[in-house]
Amino acid sequence: MFVENIFFFFFSSLSIIFSFFVIISKNPVHSILSLILVFFNAASLLIILGAEFLAMLFIIVYVGAVAVLFLFVIMMLNVKVTKLTSSIYRYLPISFIFGSIFFFEFFMLFYLDLVSVNTNYLYLFENNFVNEWSTSVVPVSNIVALGQLLYTYFSYLFILSGIILLVSMLGAISLTLHRRNDVKKQFIYKQIERDFSSSIIWKH
Amino acid sequence: MVYYLILILNIVLKSLALIVPLLIGVAYLTLLERKVMASMHQRRGPNVVGFFGMLQAFADGLKLFVKETILPSSANTLIFILAPIITFLISLFVWAVIPFNDNSVFVDINVGVLFILAISSLGVYGIITSGWSSNSKWSFLGSLRSAAQMISYEVSIGIIILCVLLCSGSLNLSEIVESQRKVWYILPLFPLFIMFFISGLAETNRSPFDLPEAEAELVSGYSTEYSAMGFALFFLRRICKYDFDVNYSYYIFSWWLVIAYGIYPFYFCPGLFLVRFKDNCNPFLIYLGKSSFS
Image (cartoon, rainbow over all chains, first blue to last red; front, side, top):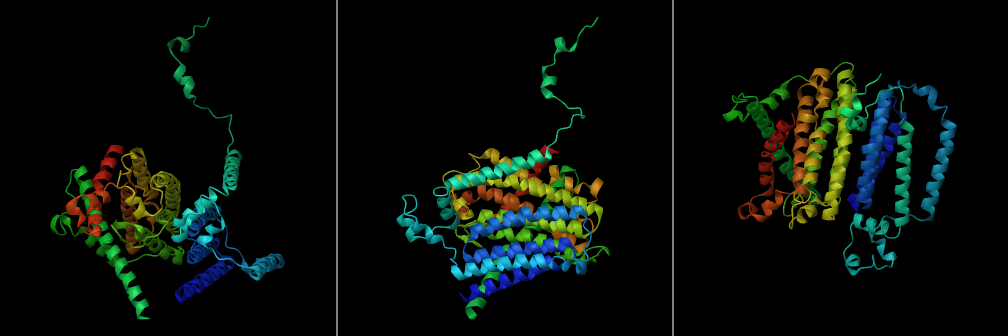
C-alpha cells in the first residue's frame, strides 16, 4: 500500500508538472512532447488503479495515434515560436471561467462519492452469463470483465458507437475525396474488352 | 527496507539477464547479416577481427563509442540527444513480456499483446523527433517517410494479431503459446504469417521497403546528422526491433517454442539460450525473402 501511494504521488505530480509545461513552453513541439508525457502519467495512474486494459488503450489511442497526428501537423505547419508575454493575459478571463467550472465538477464528484475501479463488480449483475462460481472465486481479468459486459448488457451501445465511428470515417473520406475531371484516367475494363474486331474501324 | 532492496536487486539482475544476451545476439546478428550479404555479393565479408570476424561487431561498437559526438549548431539539443536514447530504450522495453520458456518470463501481464502494440507505437516518436530536432531537410523528410511507414504497417500487424487472438482467446503471450500445444497457428494461419512477415519487414524499413533510407535522395534518412553513439543507438534499435518482430512472429505463430516444449533434449535447455540460438538462425529466412523480392 505504501509503495502504491508513493507511485501515485510520483505519477500524479509528474502529470501536473508536465501539463504546466504544455501550457508555458514557447515551442509548440515541446508542448506536444510534454502532452505525451502527461498521457503517459495518466496511463500509469490507471495501471495503479488496476485497469491495465484501459491504460494500454489510452497509450495506443492517445499517444500512438492522436499525439502523432498533432506532432505531424505542428511540424509540417512550421509554427513560429510564440511571444509568450503578450498572449498569456488575453486568455486569462475565459480560462478562469473554464477552470472554475472544471474545479466545481471535480468538487461535486469528490463531494458525492468516488467509486474506485473494481473488476469484481460483475456480481452486481445477476445473470446466467456472468454469475458463475468460477468467476466469483477467482477474480476475472480486466479484459474478460469488460468483454462480458460489453457484449451482453451494453451490446446495443457498443454497436451504436461502432456505427458512429464508421459514419465519422466515411465523412472524413468523403470530405477529402474529390474527383477531378481534367485528368486522364486508365480504365482497365475498357482496355481488357478491346479486341481486334472492335479496335480497328474502317471509316469511309 | 531489506525486502525492497532485494526486490530492486532482483529486478536489476533479471533485466540484465535479459538485455546482455540480447545485445550480444544483436552483435552477432549484424555479423551474420554482413556475412550472408557478402556471400550474396561473392565477397568474403568481415574476416580480419577475430576468428571468422567474430569480434567485428564489438570492434565497430568500440569505434563508434570512442568517436566524437557532433552536435549540429542549429539542432534542438535536448531532443536531439534524447531521441536515440528513447528509441533504443523502447526497442528494449518490448522484450519484457516475451516468454522464454515454461514459467520464465520477465513480467507476465494479462495485456501483453496490447503492451507490445502500445510500446512499439512509441518508437515512432524517437524517429520523428530525431528528424525534426536535427534541423536538416534530409533527416526531416526521412523521418516523415519512416514514421508514415511505421504507423501504416502497425495497423496491418494489429489486424493480423487480432486473428491470432481470436484463435487463442487471450492477450497473454504465455497463454497464446500454451494454446498452441494442439496445433501451431502457423499451419492454419499460414497466409497471415506471410503477411505478418512482410509487414514486419516494412515496419523495420528493411530491404524491399527501405524507402525511408533511400541513399540517393535522403543521404541516410532520419539518422543523417547523428554521429558516434547516437548513430550506434539508432542502428542497434533497428536490429533489435527487427529481431523482435521475427521473434514475435515465432511466439504468436509459434513454430519454435512448442518444438522446445515437445522434443526431449530441448526440454532441458534454458529458454534464454534457445531464444538466442534461434535468433541467429533468423537472417537466413530474412535473406531468403530479401533475395526473392529484390
